[in-house]
Image (cartoon, rainbow, N blue to C red; front, side, top):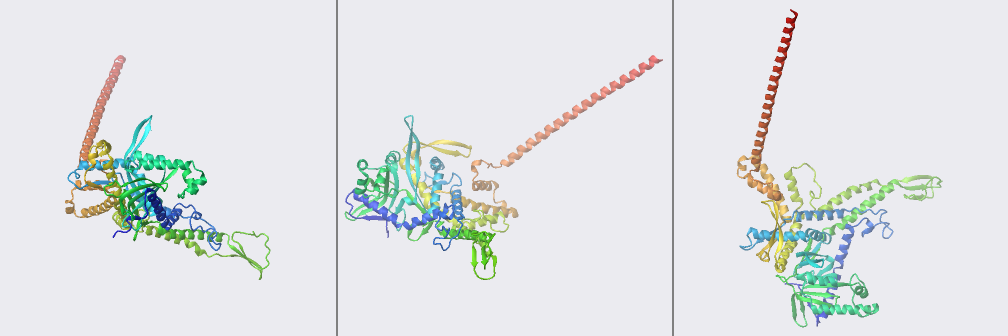
Amino acid sequence: MSVGNTIDLRQVTNDDSLAREIATLWMNWDTSRADVKARWKETTSYVYATSTKDTSNEGVGGQDGSGGWSHSTHLPKITQIYDNLAANYMSALMPHDDVVQFFGFSQDAVIKEKRAKVEAYIKTKHRLSKFRTTLYQIVNDLLLYGNCFAQVYYVNESSTISGIPQLAYSGPKIRVISPYDIVFNPFATSFEKSPKIIRTVKTLGEILRDVEENPSEGGYYAKGVKKWIKCRKAIATMDSSDIDKYLDVGIAGFGSATSYFQSGNVEVLEMYGDIFDQETGTLLKNHIITVVDRKYIIRKEPVGTWSGFPHIFHCGWRLRPNNLWGMGPLDNLIGAQYLINHLENSRADAFDQMLLPTRVVVGDVQEDGVIPGTPGGTYRIPTGDGSVANLSPDTTVLQADMQIASKMQQMEEFVGSPKEVAGFRSPGEKTAFEVNSMLQASGRIFQHRLHYFEEEFLERVYNAELEQAKAFLNKADLIRIYDTDDDVVLFEEILPEDLNIFGKLIPTGARGYLRKQQLAQNLQGLAQATQSDQMLATHFPSIKMAEAWVELLDIKDLGVLEPWGRIREQAEGAQKTAIAQQSVQQQQAALQMANREQGQVANAEQNILEAASAYSAKAGGARGG
């Protein structure tokens, strides 16, 4: 039986009374989660603290004068865990841009080219709308508050250049909703079915811009908006005392009604869900109602989605029984962080005590040369023989370092951080296969959280983006496609009918990343097995194995796979080697020929010289005779 899936109201006679009821419901639900917000505040203070003075365990001097410590060092272990989890979440969820796959459920939808166009459309819009940055903000909310919220809507953002309107971005977009700005019935059967109210603070211009640029945000009452603006103008002419006297409006963050209305800002409460009027028996099913100034309704219409539920999504890090508010990964670590800070600062105090120990002065002692009021202090015993000695502190307190290190390691384990991924390696030498096995085993909690986030949150966000595109894309748009065969980037047109195929988008970031890790580990084990059994290796073709490794390593875009490419390279290498050797041989032969010819010339010259010498000798002998 459904519980808390509908808001039951009484005495709703008109839109103004309905607006007041919705505003009252916001305040009641917001007040009921005061403990949750206090816990969020405490967790946030520890994550961003620079000293213990910024946290609830200030400790300095003791809160009541009976304890505490003189130092205020904050060891930011909880901050390191928070940053480590955020980095690993993003690394696993978005290891690359190809983290979305379209699975078709009809004959048309299984055609590769059509699936590729849908995937390319979503990937292109993600690049243009900075989806990765938005996802990082969502992950930060999940880790810091234990809850994250996002809304998918369609926008036609434009700007004006030289008086000419220019379309800046058109397509689905993600709006991050702060956990502080949304309330709902935590005891409903699901967040999807629970009535929910979102609070935002906007200017009048921003509301009018939403109507103009966001088709999915249309439906504002023209009559309601005119009435509201007229009342706003009338209030602007009132005296401050009259505003506070006649307008019973207390807006969070503004204080008095005067401060609110003179700020130029508008509080907008948007209620999504079912409302049942018990007096008239009227049921407003799957409606969106927009309330401004907690008094006026400027929109009341059915939610324009295929399912009837708004495209607002929620994910909790650790689920609670019978409560939709999730628990954060850092909530359980506050006590351990408190203890770490206590041990660190107490150890520092003990070390100071060793450097400047307490003096014990017995009897009547001349204090010339003794520095009065030293940090260690002085303990006086008025009777007894005169003596001065230092009170030796207990040095075992310095072992707090070991306790601090132990607590830090336990905190990593409590939150489920993979040890190897976090930079910690268990002792002992291991093979690559053993390391991968330990990675899989130690990271099961982390993997479970990732899988749940993808299935519960990202998958719904991706398909809501596709639904918004199908509903509001009314003309051709450009998409970016990477052609792996020709290694080029192509820009193609996508038409509205290209998106109207039956299927769904599945995120493959974390699931694909971890699955590929496991398969790579198994293939390494298979490679070791085939080395010892050559007959086994004959059943695994090398090309198929190469294709598997390219897929697992995500290097398809590099174009490194070419069947028998190495044989061609070896043939080209052998050919070039033969040509080079032939060239060397020709050069050597030419050199030998040149040397031979040079030798022959040298011999001829020698013969000529010898002949000339012999002739000269003969001629000289003849003259002498």
